[in-house]
Image 1 (cartoon, rainbow, N blue to C red):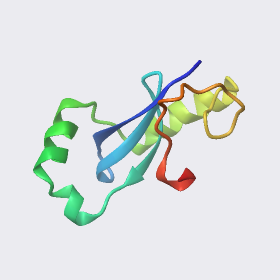
Image 2: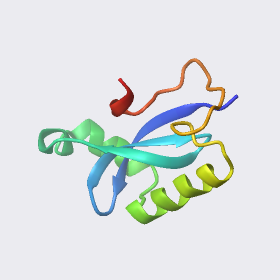
Image 3: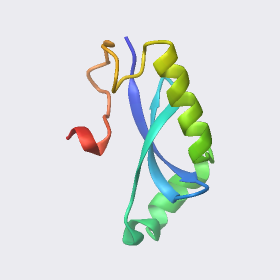
Length: 89
């Protein structure tokens, strides 16, 4: 069973973003609006989480696809407390 978590991270090309991880592997992200970019609590969270690039997220996503375990594209069993990207809500 896999668990998907979300962390606010600094994504070099985007600023602070909601990054989704499956078992600590980043695989996609959602951008946040300008007001949220300036939220001090989100900035603090982002400083404590990994700094990523869009390229790294794409590489990790590609790896999950090749392994047939990408949580958005493959039929994988997810932990009930998993947090899925905004596009799926």
